[in-house]
Image (tube, rainbow, N blue to C red):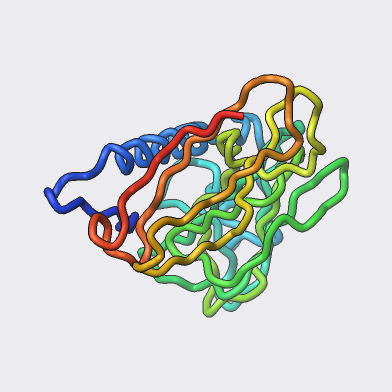
Length: 241
């Protein structure tokens, strides 16, 4: 499956140092986020139904790291759930799950719940899954995760259910700012447009919940509808507060 980054070479057919820096940062985010799957080795799995009560299709197949095994139910069953119990609280903000695509894309509706302080609460909902679905929400400290299939064109086949914790720069938290901790950088306007005849455009960046120590953020232009190097010139900066 290709990943389209929309990062073109410049007029000399090379990638600019600014784009290279952004790509390297992107790789850092990916490695830190998905380098370690957080489900403990002692975790257990259960399901509302298993095809023919056959261990070949048991709930534990969503944890065995084997792409060619999967949890499924009896023919005609299009709704049901599979639960992974961690045996202890773990912190995560990403849940990733997959269908067994060699036998087709089937799921038309799903819901993910997490068990926090002994109570189930909704984490995310959606429609299709396909080869892989990655959902991120507020970071939670949960003892279990449950994937419920709410609709499917045929009996669903789920071959993985995993949890991850995003790179610290990407975590969306409900926790309030703490004095002395770096705050959040925000743009004065979420979207800024400009005409070719505008000459220059100013962008204001502010730091919320300021701290007493120096903090900084790296900023760079990214491709839009204008032609790089012709309509606009790339700009990068490290802003210090």
